[in-house]
Amino acid sequence: MLIAEENGANISLERQHAAPLSLLIVAFILVMIDAYDMFIISFLVPLIAADLNLTPMSMGQIFAAGLAGSMLAG
Image (cartoon, rainbow, N blue to C red; front, side):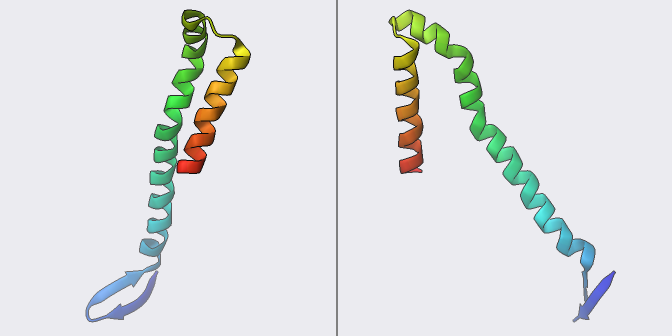
């Protein structure tokens, strides 16, 4: 659908709707990449805890402090 024509340039409705969709896709990909480290660490926590002789409670405190630091610094 043609909205306006100015100096030979057509501004279409489809083009206006493409920008928010592409922004949504890029944001979704970035969030997935950012969350990947938390996904991987969830599998490694038991191995790290066993290697360092840490209890599940102390591992929870360590990772909670890391997330709190990320929240404050981010």
